[in-house]
Image (cartoon, rainbow, N blue to C red; front, side, top):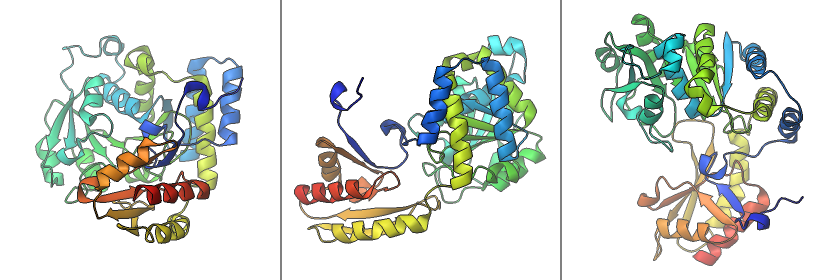
Length: 363
């Protein structure tokens, strides 16, 4: 059987928007595909597979334990549920019971963002209640501490380019607040590239997306304190049942982490070198001005930032790029300012030439 775009009447997509869920996030390697195939062709005791792959990953990542889940969002929901229920089986089977009142999850206000779904939706799915600390443009350790009460179950920090970047307390400062109040800290680091940093800082649970920086299949990873990971594992009998992950993706993701630790991801310097001729070619087109910029959250990621002038707006250019086959997807966050960003981490040389050709037609 041949799989193709044509079979399902699908458009080919050039992903110049980055590791985005709406486009399937990442391409996976032959190594990962082989591990997925092994998982798909064999049977396992699933509870044993979860424990053993978690133990294997915890050794690689130098943490007490790890649990593979279906996505980073599932990681948020199940981590919240775990820290509220604290391993109590009654809570697992009755996750929203009124018998448990410690449900408040303190989050900096500028971190309660919509990353495809609002943070507060995933917290609520885990039975938590978001309590916002500080303001949209400022949150200090004192702001967080001020919101802690006897009903506080945990603190949550979202490390993401989606969040407000200025005047926010750091992860280290959040760790200090958590420790001072004897509360667990969850760090959602879904798209972050450093799999050691936040655990080493003292975060109790750290969540990663499997398909973003790690370039694995659809999956999520929660690492941290052994007791808390055990409580998360219990959620498979409760809300985690609706978020279960298959054996093929468990093994494929485990292989992806191993490969990622060995090979890393593309360096910023490499991105800049690949971007240079792309930016130069765009600057030859009418009404477009391009330059290389670094990721707004400070990651070692570089993109082409293209300012659109003339009769067409950036939003119109974006829509025209999507309209044809192949559809070209870009980063649209600054379109209202007349700027389109091209993330080339998943774009090869041939695809960059196609993008330039399309821009030439559009302009």
